Length: 444
Image (cartoon, rainbow, N blue to C red):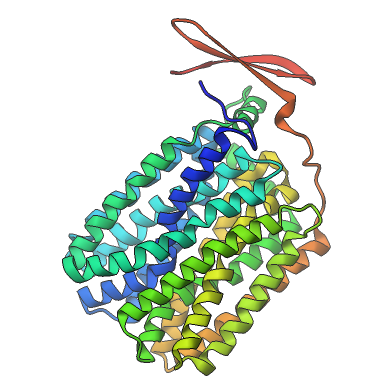
């Protein structure tokens, strides 16, 4: 059995696979507004109704965090990614053949949402298992795929929709989603991942154990501040991504121009995520302070955008701002969770954070639909989104006041792995200077 070592060797191949997985997930995040428009055209439904479908889809991506972390702790990142890919592909293909919009709640909203959620959350957690010293930089490189994917795929799938219509669009999108099976196959078990399982080898984690771990996380005041910050920010971010395309269409932009705006957003997102991850790789940088700056600047830009929304230049500038700043937070989420809770709780910590992010994404799209359906304008919804973004930034800033440092310097380099093999079995011997040696039989 081949094991990856943190920050070296195959760990960087894992980053390449994770980059590809984020290319696919980034397309869904950035272009959910275009997908909503396609559903509206197919079923002649209202904005409020389709906003609920989009809200369910986006929220389940992030509500799936605890499910993903539990499967990862029980099996592996590889198994979780492949399982998510199969669910996502099945849901998209079925969506292409439904004839009633009510079924899209099940096929696209629920099935595809959970499937993409397993893939997306695994893509975040696998970096924490494979990197220690260069974690932020590696995470920034991986999630930059969330910008490259929309940049390449948005105009391509717009042309696919124009040529093959609704069914062909979702059928081909479902086929593309199967690529996550290939990326997941690259996720070999890491030294860190096996060491964590070794520490818990004397007892098998049950459902009650998972609940107990989450209850300990709930009592962390610092974690609560971070979760509230992400909750408020993601209400705004996904409100913007869903309704930005329709807002541009109302201000006399064409569908192809809207797809180009979203491609520009994806391109800028690619560069800023890498740069943000590299900047935060220094020990002198406070990740939470950087998040405060990012959320606040994006909030101010969102409040100002309705004043200039009729100008194409303003639409391009806002696309750059939205794409560049909305995804930066994911470059440092692993480090923030580890700093607050410790390395051994990173999977459960990220899963718990995703519950709040999922709640925010569930509220955001219907909130804008509600504002518009009851007499408001897209400009009003953007103003509300900007205010919530600034509030989210201040919540992250408050975390620095109540944060308790935990000793995360204990490295998994203390574990020495020796693999012995014969014709019938493989045995892994784990040596720790502070504990007795343990050996495990590995299934081939």
